[in-house]
Image (cartoon, rainbow, N blue to C red; front, side, top):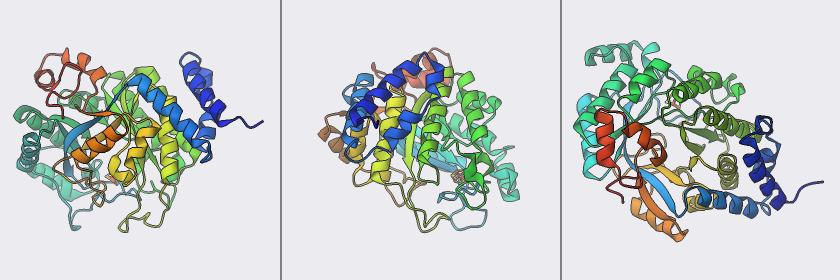
Length: 398
Ligand code: SF4
């Protein structure tokens, strides 16, 4: 018998609850797959359950992080088929920022009320490019991660912004070092499907996208209790089963270590310049289903979807259970999707309020992770104390 949509939603809610204490149920993904494939007629039930779960978790508010984007270097040793950010040395637009440029962007963001400096960069470019090794030598650093650590420290020391680095794979030692100069960090798991590394697929020639390596980095952060942002990327050649498997892998890591502060559900967007220019984009309906199932599988984890990648219908994502819009910049473009600018914060607020939520500015680390960070003495803790309000959100809350 095919279960009714309402029963399926209830089943998944029950399944999520049961899985809290019965690990063998947690491994069963059948219900989640079925819901991710639900028909348009069934979708309203799924969305209603997801939105209700969000309201039980964080009632009445939706957050965003007011940030500046600091693309420290766009050189990268990987060649992901969907990436528009990366460059080889000598290509037009190839760039590694100087410390002066980093500070200038951070200070401009500070003047506009930003509280996050999001450091995005290619993964270990010096391993492939002698030009990057020479640039790092000129700057006085042994590796991109050494340079990143110094720039996070510079921003933390010289401004009120809190760094959130996204440098790709990290060892336990590097997670430890970066955690002293940033309250949180991130690495998208993207997918658990290692088949996407085969020739011609999205992660062909992207050695740092091996799912096992990414899971190891996220687990390392968990062992060190570092608030961690991760997520999945839909529409890069994976199946619905892969999407569910990726969400369950993230949930398992969070169960073990309790450190996943945020799960991003990101949708692939095609662009003429990329290797995957002809790949069809996931539909809006697929996105809503993926977000809703993420919410039901992880009812007590912050779920985020970027608004600029779902224009003009991004406010629908509020119906599928997100409680956060991610980083929104009043200053710097989205270097990962430069053709899709972020909505202005005022527009984001209007559309969030129209759905019945208050929009609040958060820090790069979510409120529930702040007490542990603030209990450690040092500059990072001082900066957090200065930035936070009584609810654990940004003091200069917009
Ligand atoms: S997505 Fe990240 S790892 Fe992949 S090519 Fe782009 S910058 Fe490099």
